[in-house]
Length: 560
Ligand code: F6P
Image (cartoon, rainbow, N blue to C red):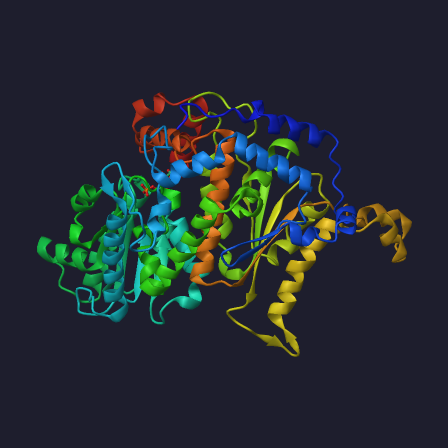
């Protein structure tokens, strides 16, 4: 592997793209009129995902220059390095092997990295997680009072929360009846209080999910949950009065997921009830590891295997398919075009699938914690813009909120629409199939963005001349449409892997380490330093800057 990244701006393709951008005049109406094959030419398939890129602002020439850029920055070599377990997470000196989590049992040749038999370890941990999931699902695992578990509460934050909660919400139709998962992440005590409010401690299982098992929010919430369990068991008539009975209660109602199993034991959770993973799995890439235990319990091992199979299908596609049909490469390079050549600052993901309502939030960590960097992996400063701001909400809600800006604002906002052909709830409103009403909106939005409405078209509707300008839609607003037959576990795995690899592609072009997250550390450190000041330590208060000191004074004066 190269010891320093290629500076993309020095490549021939980059310079050609810059020249191409100067006179680039998007004309989706004209392009579709002139190229009858455009829709087909710019559509590709990955797994079950049918991806239409044709309403994006690119020509065949743009695409071929972007593919040339992918070659010149060594994307192929970087992909191979990642899959092979090279330490491409340079600043943490780690391999990046989330793709190994979804290799099928018996994959050949077996993967060995840094002396570890990766496949064997992954399968062993999966088997352990699945066996536990089955015990909960079948009712064999009993709480301290002998009752089966009905509610699983995952306590984690960031990658130890966003993936599990997003996937649980997305796959609700696959959740076993009588079982429920809830999620606590925020250290705001409201989160825990509201989540536990109506729960029965006798039928509740906590999963403490933390890669490091040091995260302040998670460990604080885990301790609070333990107190809650003891207190509420007593309140419901259980004899929890000595250390032994407290320990037994924790053993039946707490399990953990972590790479730091020693710290799990320190917390009082039996290592037999802990599920591990490895430091080569980044937090935001970990939903397919034991971090997904809450999901595995809810949807069951078979569905979880389908979920993993979905990831793997996209991994294989990404690793082997030529750029011209390689969907993560095409989408990642297209984002480079928008960010670095056409001046886009944000990227919207708008699922027309209510079950995907947490997908944009999940993608925010995946993309922005990965690519929100200003230095490259060798420490040199980047000389281009990097990570976009990712955001989104499900359609059609967004249509009645922020779509105005996407349609008529001054900013370029590339959009990814996601929809499935078969709804989980096929409802009729009279003669109307409601899913069809819904999808008509999905089709309409990408069409309106792409082709707009000219002043003459507005006039032809008899519009008063004074308001014609306000009713014109410029068109040439880019979108990608991703469709799948249904939102199955496999399709969800495919969607996640697609965006993981899009993120990777962009990181490679920018030469950054997409797998570290040093930018989250300073705030954590300062919070620790500030905590004594907030609690009234005058010396700690004196050490603060004037603004922070004044804010803390205000808090202390107001606090009842
Ligand atoms: O602070 C950011 C972060 O480190 C994320 O990268 C991670 O997903 C999250 O915190 C939670 O970390 P952990 O799983 O170690 O508790």
